[in-house]
Image (cartoon, rainbow, N blue to C red; front, top):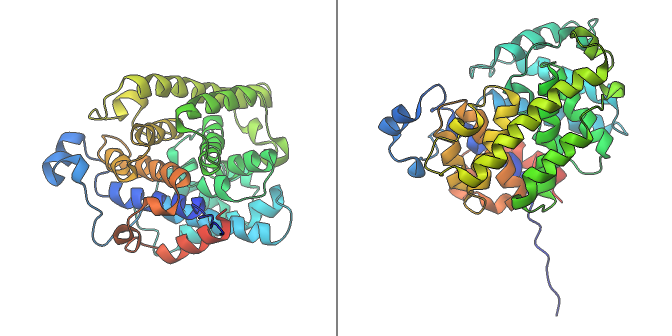
Length: 340
């Protein structure tokens, strides 16, 4: 008698979950919870819109995924091999007629500057910005197999820095990719916050010069170590708030009240994680909770979906939802490439 091992298809699950959360939160972004409830009814009954359109969150995730795929097809992943195709994909997204989903100003300004191929990417990076555009799109870095810890951290931070140069944007993107990776590998959600806090402490003074070059000199820190430590310290602060919220906050309470509204990178990570951790075995409920928030609902929900899908796999999402999501074909193609 033989047994068949069913793969959970973590990459496909994560990418689909990200897009589904994005589409669910698209109509509710910029609205407070009372107005969302008044318009859509009880939050536990939120339904996927028809058509199920996504925002720039999913579009930029796909741009990063395409760039990452190209880079890895060319050989061992390194800074230059990674930066070039990702930069090209970001510029293509910026110039696309489909870039009409209320993209963030930082991404628009930086990508416009990245069009100039003679310009060092560090000069395009918006060094004061730590918006969630840095890590709403980073999931592919956590999903692609075969990277070393240094490659994964360096790539996560570099893709963020192409647009958002603030050290907290870099650290939050690194943490987000690490969380996706841990969950895809089967880490227990109950211990996840502790693992992320340990990772932040271990990397607090590590500046990835091979990947980031002289980016740090655009800020006002005395050393690269001081530059990156600022980012990790802000992430550690929000992880402490998350640890407390998981234990004390009712699922009926707007999660933004505990861990922030998600407009900035570290809060998007924490609030997306909070929604996932409150409903580990109820992925649709996690997305609905994330979409019914007073903050950046689409980005919070897309991260909650990325975490839930990485942990539970592709079967987490009902076919009647997954089949309707915009860009489904490309999401599934990338996921199949990286599924373990």
